[in-house]
Image (cartoon, rainbow, N blue to C red; front, side):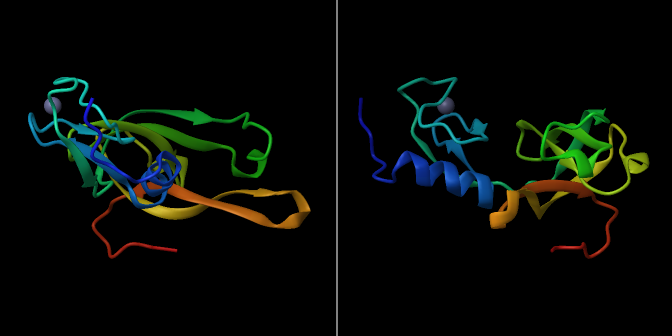
Length: 141
Ligand SMILES: [Zn+2]
């Protein structure tokens, strides 16, 4: 199987996590997030390349998390939504802000936020969450 990418897998995953880099099949146009090295539709016949997602999309459905897992207790209650990205694929993620504002059909945009902090050593993990896109300039942290 031809393998044109020399970028290590861990860095590809890191890029996808922090910059919303997915992949797009140059053969059939299918988009994937997280990125794939093989097109799910064309299999090995597809030529897959990095694709920058906007991260913008529409809430398809959501769940309110009231009993949060360890490390996320302070965040509860919060909404986890299935988001249909404008590019044509879906992703699940946390929606920040008031849970009262979360509804199916609402537009969302990505924001870069703190995900969790490891104990006392202060190691902070960041990642992408979503906020309701009300058309304002945004609250990019
Ligand atoms: Zn394809």
